[in-house]
Image 1 (cartoon, rainbow, N blue to C red):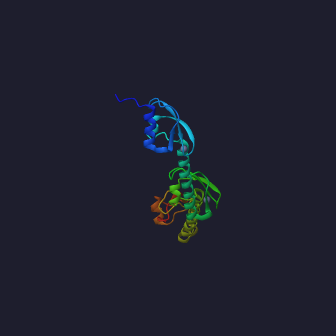
Image 2 (cartoon, protein in one colour):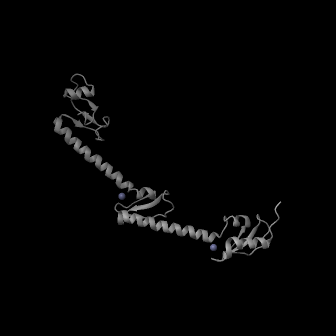
Image 3 (cartoon, rainbow, N blue to C red):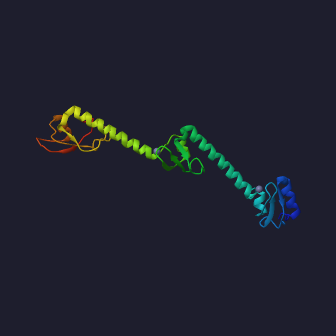
Length: 207
Ligand SMILES: [Zn+2]
Ligand SMILES: [Zn+2]
């Protein structure tokens, strides 16, 4: 069994390994017992087990905390700077930056929307969810209008479109009503005879 370390040996060990940065204030009573330490640099006095102190696990908490906060503030400033470089005043960082994969609150100054986003995703080009939603529905509206025009150009007023155009390939999304006199369309719709009123589905490609 190893010889039990004395108080003097512990003090010597602290000095040899760490230098003058810490002063042992308490009395060493074994590696599992707590002893009062002083961090000279910041004046913080605290108690810790000597074992974890020597293992670097329990150095001055005040300084560790400050170091972490500082590096965090730095990253926050960095992130705000990067955001500004990308979008100028259009977006504003409201939340506290934690990591690049932790959601942070951002405001889109153009529409006023405040939302959560991963810093990484924002820097990769993800933008305001609300504006994106509006833009998509705008696009759908536009293509619906051009779809109406296209159908009218081809068949005049023979058909009335009931649904909303959602893309050339999704054939189940829109309904046409009226008499499908066009044999090509009748075949597509699986219609037989001279039925005069029918609602069915087709895509622009089929038309
Ligand atoms: Zn300290
Ligand atoms: Zn927006």
